[in-house]
Length: 568
Image (cartoon, rainbow, N blue to C red; front, side, top):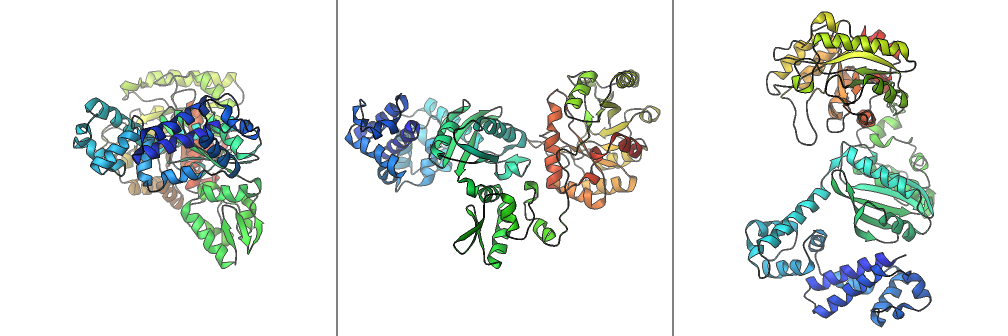
């Protein structure tokens, strides 16, 4: 049904008229019509077909005519007229909770507000609260609405965005007439943070698909509900987030997916290539004159330009197109190439999963091995293991491995790098372990580079854990010269970790590229402390793919036998 779609148009007409200072009864008429359509149990299209719109209480001839116009043409002249002359930035304010059109009109007329920054300014200087009928409590509620709105516009961690997108994709598989679905944009390119959450679909009757989308139980607000595009705000574990759905014809799906995946720079390069070949490329397809020669699938879009199908993570215009033309495009690691996780915590320190539980989880992921790397004794806050406790854990792991088949738990530690660069466990114990990850957990501004370099002199250290120490959500990381650390790792034959926990993703793709260029091996570890944490591996793999790392660059792609041989 298009009831909600048309109701949203009438609500926006009412808002626009109120901003323009239109008489109250006209504004009220559109709000009333919108409310009637929202609550109407019958399909407005069916009523229009049967010429029964005016039998609905509150729907007069004028409103009925506008509904019929929209149903027939997909447009409504009154909507376009009402919104004309109003700056887009002023209309944006209507998306802020607790801020009605009447207040926007007052702030615009009395204080010259034209956008969100103007509004925030008059809140800060007290001008808004001084207006008639406002007051501090009301302004405080508006400020909370602004904060909520701005949070929804922020870039979000890949984990939050992908989790929400996959929930929507799973739901949309049941949409009527749906054919193909995919995430797009920076989300599909696996950037560490994402702005918009974009979904692309093909199918018959776009309006029905978008109505189905807008009916998702997680939707808190509908921003747009048309025939080819829908936009909603959805609840997520990190607050409300906007999700956009675009519907295209199935014959255009490949071209649209390529276009909306981006990046912008990659697409600009493609358009230039197409022009040189006498072609035109757009979200609708690849054309030679008026003839469409490609568009159904991404592969044929690229093939029309003499190019292979690029993995989405590589589409950043960082030389991938030039290498492809020379036949030298590198083969990057696949999500299915990972044979094990090389940094996990158990309930022996600050984890929440038993050793046998970790083995079960690893088996479920098809892994061959999993390295148990609990904290060392200096990390008292995390229940760090003393040498005696670590030896007991090693015996339990050995006993467990003897009982089980399939997944082998590797004995390991995440040993602290101390203030003088020494390691927090004796060498004779480190020598007995399968994997030694060494990390800095304190003194982030105290000789970090020198400490890491000295630690790597230890012959039993295998991997430097989370080398920059950053947290994407708000910690810059250590005061460390990563160039020097990378050179030290190459000289001493040590690996560096790509910590796959979504808020770390450390090393970042810039330094991963440098690692590859220097021949420094990379170890992927989820650093998990919970049962769901092993699933974070895909975020690390996504960043590795963005850095063009191949299987030979990553320790986790080795078989168990190959890994043990390399560690020895």
